[in-house]
Length: 214
Image (cartoon, rainbow, N blue to C red):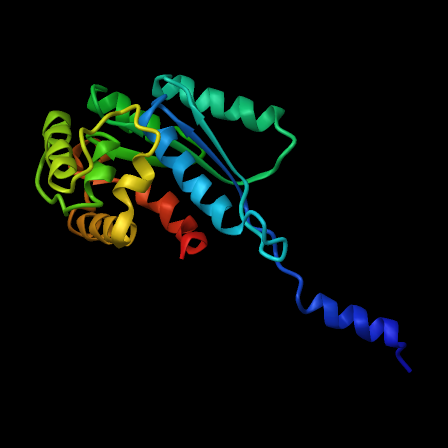
């Protein structure tokens, strides 16, 4: 006959949660990208930080200012020396001024998840406001993003804006951005990354974390 203690332990085990994966997000940029992801992290912590019964992912964000090759080496160094086990490792960089060959090679030779953007990370920010399904230069993206900021009463767009996440994700815009990027990817899924403009894979990071914001 099973003891009451054994039954109690079995009952408790039914409520055990699997801990979500730790995230490591290493960004090429030192301002916009880490500001955005830190904003996302803060919102998750604000919602669940005091709820001990809810397990949330630990998210480490690094803004480096490094080029693509150095970025991957730096990511490996973090993993080697960290006491944490990262279940989700993302390297974030742009096409920007890199040659097609440099960009495609960096993605191909990276052993981690790559959230690349062509032409730049601001394309992801712009996707919160509109779907972009035509070729755009990095200057085009910046101009259109600045126009959207003004139209929505958000002031001037700035790469150093620490409130960038809250500004662009208000009124359900986060889900809009993900849907816009998924739609564009469906239309533009052939060829090397360097030829797939416009395209940003940043939505894949956010899509994996959005459940903690809902």
